[in-house]
Length: 73
Image (cartoon, rainbow, N blue to C red; front, side, top):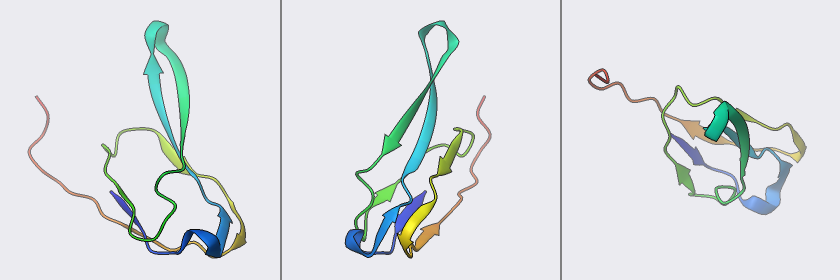
């Protein structure tokens, strides 16, 4: 999971990108803009292909946490 620690107006860029497979095994990239505000949280499986776009202005701080549970079966 990723928790945004910066105010949205203190930086530009830094959007989270998540990749999913659509029908026909086509990869689709989703730009997650809803978590740019301070205190916003997103939880997703770590095996989901993801990255953060470069921050173009200011500083972006976030807290990233991994949780290990029982393996999927």
